[in-house]
Image (cartoon, rainbow, N blue to C red; front, top):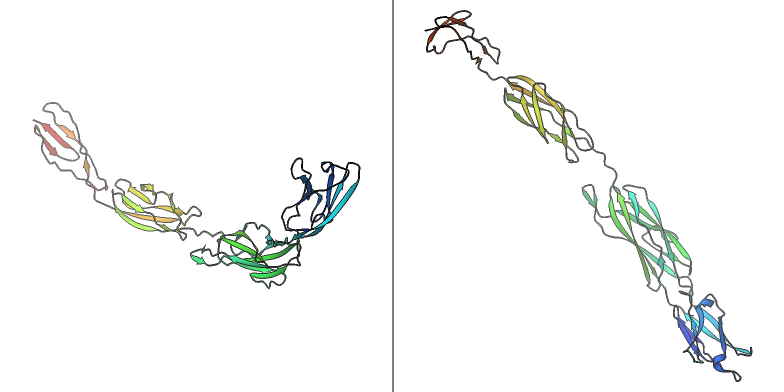
Length: 376
């Protein structure tokens, strides 16, 4: 066997054809084994032999280097014949390095409350280039441009960011030195902007000396502080109405947060009735009543009740004419009949009676306390 030295790039597969010979044996009966001096580069499971085709005497040595590792190793191939005789050949395989991008660890979403204290996020960085001396990494933090609502104004920034670690100087950029295959750590300081809440996305970028990058993005959600509710304010009202009339009354209240309001009657009127529809009340005084009346109400904004407000009502008197009562009488022919006239005054005024029309078949004579009917 005569196998030349080989070189390949990192993470590539190498296939080396060769064929052994023995003066006393058939080539197909020879047995081959292969080993590597650098098992970190070529572990046993990454070395195997195959035939070029089924009955071929040509062997194929398949070599797969460990991912992301560069270096060199001696490869020893041993051939053994059917009588136990053996021979070996050694050659060198060099795995040339290929720059690998840095790897940033995943960063989860963070949820905080408006005006919280600063909090800290660990940033882990790994470099797989294990052939070179330590590689320099540059970390850049970018706060995406997001409009945030804070109460009624707009904040341009939701959080302030700075990296903390060796040679970072609490800025948004810093450079750290990494050791190949090992993990380096930084700390990202996040300070919420005062009186701002909402959502923003943060990008963390690692750039190595070859310009290869890795970017991890994560979200920060800033929840608003609970807002203390201001109770609504209900207003008193004085109104007037004529006796025996009805009136629609608009209840009034204001709320600082402009919440929807619901109105409740607390004390009904003593001299009338009310029917409420949303914020409107239909008030009807009792028949023939005049004088003062009132009722009370409150408003609720689904959080708190308002103060108790009063509706003061004055019912003005209106003159009500008296109502005379009809009478049905029976008497015998030529027999006079005494009658007592009755009537009602809604205003409780004294009443006097006066004959308006005489009967057709008799005569009415007015006396005290009777009126006498005398038939024809």
